[in-house]
Image 1 (cartoon, chains in turn green, purple):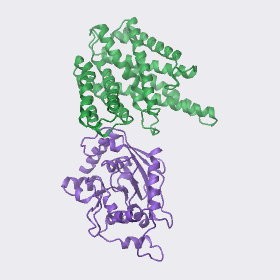
Image 2 (image 1 turned 120 degrees about the vertical axis):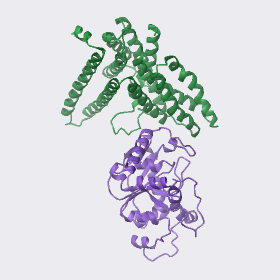
Image 3 (image 1 turned 90 degrees about the horizontal axis):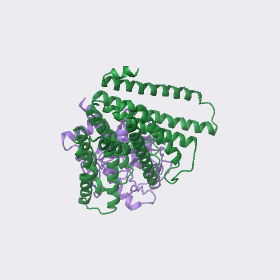
Amino acid sequence: MNNFLRNLTATQQVGALFLVMFGILSVVTIWAFVRNLREHASDDPESEARILEAKRFWGLLKTSWMMASVFWIGWVLGDTVATVLFAIVGFFALREFITLSPTRRGDHRSLVLAFFVVLPLQFWIVGSKHFDLFTVFIPVYVFLALPVVSALANDPQRFLERNAKLQWGIMVCVYGMSHVPALLLLDFPGYRDKGAFLVFFLVFVVQTCMLVQHLLGRRFPHKPVAPQVSQSFQWTSWLAGVAAGGLAGGLLTFITPFKPGQALGMALLACVAGSLGHLVMKALKRDRGITSWGMQGMSVTGAGGLLDRVDALCFAAPVFFHSVRWYFGL
Amino acid sequence: MLAKLMSFLLLGIVRFLTGSQARWYGCPPKAEQRIYFANHQSHADMVLIWAALPEELRSITRPIAAKDYWTKTPFRQWITTAVFNAVYVDRQATPARPPAPLAAEPVGVLEALATAASDADTAMAGGPDPSPEAPPRAPTPEELRAALPESDPLAPLVRALESGDSIVIFPEGTRGHGDEPQPFKSGLFKLAQMFPQVVLVPAWINNVQRVMPKGEVVPVPILCSVTFGEPVQLEAGEERRPFLDRARRAVIALREV
C-alpha cells in the first residue's frame, strides 16, 4: 500500500488525498443525514437542544464541504487560481470585519485603499513569490499608508480607535489569509508541486484541534478560563485539542517534507496559534456584542460568518509559515 | 439583451460589495401590488432595494428617478428605463408653489413627492388635515385620482400604480443624516388614499450610507441588508400626520429586528 502510494506521481498523490477527503466527508454527511431523519418526532426540550446541536453540526459540515471544494478547485486549476481563491476568502472576511467595526465618513478612502489596493497587492506579491516583501508589506508600508490617508480626511475623532480597527482587520483577514497560499509556493528541496499537502496539513491539524477542543469542552464542561470572553474555552479541553492536533500532524508526516518529530512540533505550533487566535477573535466579537461575524440573526444559510470559520487559520498560517521558513532556512 | 447583461453585471457588483441581503420579516416576498417605503440615506438605496428583491418581483417593482438628472444623457436614460424600469418624477413640476428645498443629488429620488406637500406639512405639522374644500363625505379613491392635476409630481406614480406596478418610495424626501429618518412627507399618505388596495410595505435599509457616502465615487464593501416589515394600512378616517408618523415608526422598528 505504502509502496504503491510512493510510486505515484505527485499529482496522483494529491489526487488520492482529495479522494480520501471527499470520501470521508460523504460518509459523515450520509451518517448525519440518516441520523437527522430519525430525530424529528418529539418536541421536549432535550430533543430541541439536540436539534440545535445537529444544526450546528450541519453548519460545520457545510463549511468543511465548502473548504474542501475550495481547496480542490484551487489545486485543480493551479497555484494562481488558488491564490485568487484565498484572496476572495480574505476579501469576504475583511468585509465582515469592517461591517461590524463602526467607521466614520473620513475612513472611506482608507477603506477603499484597504480593499482595492492593499488586498490585491498582497496576494499579487504572494503569487509572484516576493517572500521578503510579502512579510513586511502590510506591517511596514501599509501600517503607515492607511493612517496617512485617514489623517488627510481631516477627522480626528476616535482616530486611533478607527485606525487600529482597520489595521487589525487587515492583519487578520489579509495578512493572515495570504500566508495560506504562500505555503503552496514554498520551495522545499525534493518536494516540488506538493505545496497542496502543506496547506492540507495546516488546515487539517488546526481544524482537528478546534473540533476536538469544541467537542471535549461540550462533553466534559469545566470552569471557563475567561467566562466574559468565552464560555467554552477551558485549559483542559484546549490542551487536549492541541495535543490531538499535534498528534494528527505527527500521523500525517508522510505527506509533509518534515520528519515525524518536526511534523509534531509544527502541528503543535499551528494548533496553539490557531486556537488562541480564535479566542482572541471571540473577545472582539464579545466587545461588539455579537456571537458571529455573519450578518446578525440573518442566518438564511444556517451558517455564521465566514470569518468565524477561518479566523483560526488566519492566525495559524503566518506562525506556521514563518517557523517553517526559519527552521528549514528557505 | 444589453439591458439584461447590464442588470446582471450591476447585480453582481452590488452583491459582491454589499451582500444585498433581503430579510422578509413581516411579509413574504409576494407578487402583489405593493408600495415599498424605506429610509433614505444614500444614493445607493434604490439600487440596493432593487438588488435585494427576488428576480420575479424586481421586474414588476419600479423605483423612482428624478427626470431632469436621469434623462440628461442617453446612457442615464437608458439605464433608468431599460435596467431599472424607473418612474420619472419631475422635480420642477409645481411652479405655483414655492420651490421646496431640493437636494442637489440626482438619485435623491423623492424630492418631488416632498414638494407636493412640504408647505402644507410645515404649516400643519401634527394638526388636523387642512382640506380647505372639506367635502361632506370622504372622496373615493377614484375621485381623488381623477382630481389629481397632470402637473402634480405624484401623477407619474399614480399612473404606474394604475397600470399595476409596484413602486419603491423614500417618504423622507431627502437623504437623512442622523440616525433616525426625518419626518415623512405626505406623498405616501396620498398614495395610500388613492390606492387602498395596494399593500404598503415598510423597509429598513441598513448600512448603505457606509458603502458610498456623499461625495465619494468608489464604493467600499460592507454588508448591507434590507428588512421588509409587516404591511401598514391606512385606517378608516385616519389623519395624515398620525398615519405618516405610524408609517415612520414601522420603518424605524425594523432596525432592531
